[in-house]
Image 1 (cartoon, rainbow, N blue to C red):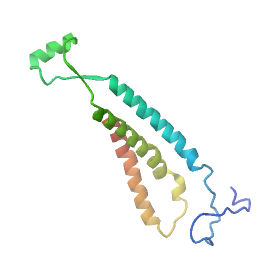
Image 2 (image 1 turned 180 degrees about the vertical axis):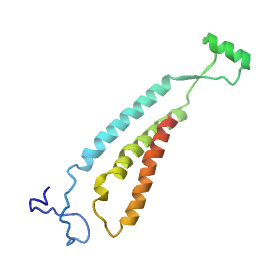
Image 3 (image 1 turned 180 degrees about the horizontal axis):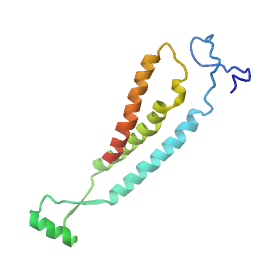
Image 4 (image 1 turned 45 degrees about the vertical axis):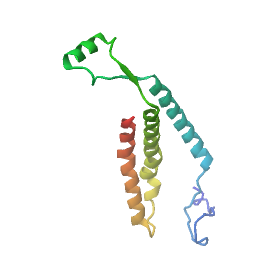
Length: 147
C-alpha cells in the first residue's frame, strides 16, 4: 500500500542500500504478538494442570478377567490412582508444544506472503518452510493427542 503511494519504508536488512520497493514493516510489535500467545498458553497449561489433578484412572491390571467385568459393572470398589506430578507436567508440556507447532509454525509455513518473491536463498527458505509445515500439521496435533 505504502509503496503504491510513493512512500518507501526503511528496512532493517543488510546491505542498507538494498532497494526493496514493496517492503512494508510489520505493524505489530513483538510484545503485541507474544503477550496474547503466552497469556493463552499460560491459561491452557493452568487449566490442564488443574483438571489433571482432579482426574483418577482405574488400575485394571490387578484384576482377573471375570473380576474385572464385575468391578467395572459395580464401579464402586475398584482402586484408583492419581496422576503423578511428572505426568501432569508432561501433559502441560505436550499441550504447550502442540499449540506452538500449530499456531506459530503453522502461520509461518502457510503464510502467502512468503511465496511472493524469489530471493537468492529461495531453495533453502522453501526447505525450512516445508519442515515447518510438516511439524505444524503432524507434530502439533500429535502433541495434543499425547495429552
